[in-house]
Image (cartoon, rainbow, N blue to C red; front, side, top):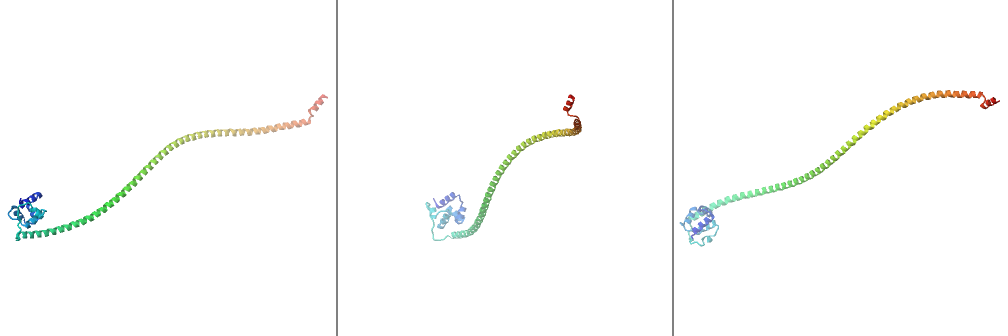
Length: 246
C-alpha cells in the first residue's frame, strides 16, 4: 500500500474530500491533489501536515507503506509559500476564534447572570408557592371550620324550628285555654252581675222589710205596754179567782 492510498483510506473513513484535507492540513489543494495522484513526491513537511490533519503521527501514517519520503535539505518554495499562507490563515482564524471565545465568554457570563436571576426567580417562586400552599391550607382549615359552624348552626336552626313548632302548639293551646277562661270569666261576670242585681234587689226588699218590721215591732211593743198597763190596774189573776171564789 502506498502512502497516497493510506491517506485516501483515511479520507474514506472520515468521509472527507481532498479539499477538506487541504483545509485541515494547511496545504494548497493542488499540492494535495498531486500528492494523492502520485504526481509529486511526499516530503517530510507534507507528511507532518497531513498526519496532523488526520489526528495521527507521521510515523503511524507512513508505517506499512512502500512510499519513501523525500527528506532532502532543499526547501520547497511552494511549500514555504503554502505554509506562509496557511500561517496567515491560522492567524486570522485564531483572531476570529479569540473573538468568538470572547463573545462566548461574554455569553457565558451573561448566561451566568441570567442563571443567577433565574435561580433567584425560582427561589422567589418557590417561596411564593410555599406561601400560597400555607394560605391555601389556612383557607381549607377555615373552610372546614366554617362548614362545621354551618352544620352546627343548621342543627341549631333545626332545633329552634322544632322548639318554635312546639311553642306554637303550646301557644295555640294557651290561646284556646285563654279563650275558654275568657268565656268562663264572661259567664262568671254575667252571673256575678246578675247575682249582684238580685242581691241589690234583695237588699232593697230587706230594707223595706226592716222598715215594716220596725213599724210592726213598735206597734206590737205598744200593745204589749198597753196590756201591761191594763194588767197593773186589774188585780192579779189569783185575787180575781179568790174574789170569784168568795
